[in-house]
Length: 174
Image (tube, rainbow, N blue to C red):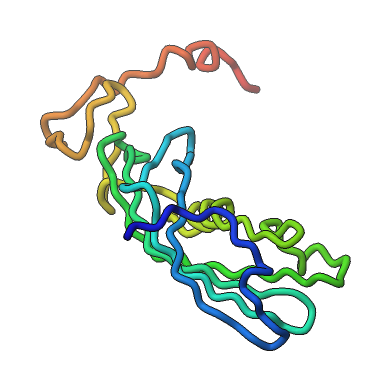
């Protein structure tokens, strides 16, 4: 039996007394990730996530874990890139405090927005640059050819001065 992806968890349905905890395996629907103006997609409709929820004396503590593989363009050469990471995120929501650090933005009334939290946690878990390979050389700044496939001896351009700087060369400094 396939379970439908979860995006909202009703905390009252967990029936946790103070000092108790529970572990849930839930499918979570992830939205496409937008990074640096590019869209990165994951395969499948949902990701199987593990949610640990506990009830300290004044609110909830959560831990969310799931594997993530995203695919999209390399940030240097625009070729195909894929990244695999393990997402491990924690949140606290204290109910009787005005301290913003102890209030989770993903808890509203008695509902945990698991989809939004999983999306934000996925973005934070990804590397700062998604590359096709670690030593990606990028694109040639003059002709736009991928330098990963180009032979450095054969790929040369005139190294003449950039015409956009011509007026600065006329400048005489005393």
